[in-house]
Length: 104
Figure 1 (spheres, rainbow, N blue to C red):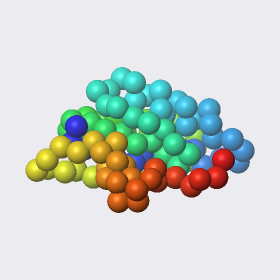
Figure 2 (figure 1 turned 45 degrees about the horizontal axis):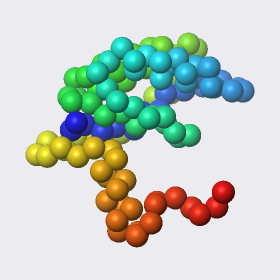
Figure 3 (figure 1 turned 120 degrees about the horizontal axis):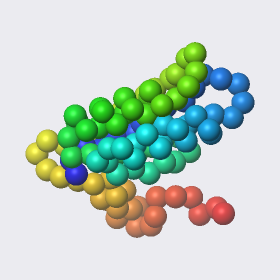
Figure 4 (figure 1 turned 180 degrees about the vertical axis):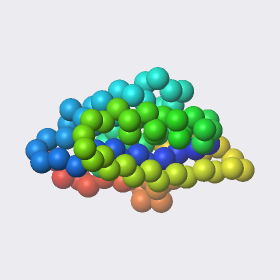
């Protein structure tokens, strides 16, 4: 996969956004993308920007509300393929340990 993105979609509301965020994540299932949700957004990997933008649009449209905030940050490596996990592994090699705190 060549296109990696961080997508954050959320309604602008008081209280928990979890239900609406879940709708956005579920919308990604209709597209040929791989994704992993974390506390700050969802990392998406796609073969093309067309597929990525379509998936992001669907996630945005899936959220109900008078106001929806969407942020999309894209890393489009056009000359070679690098997966999201390879990017994390590169940092891990430099650190000599997993790139997380040791607290539990």
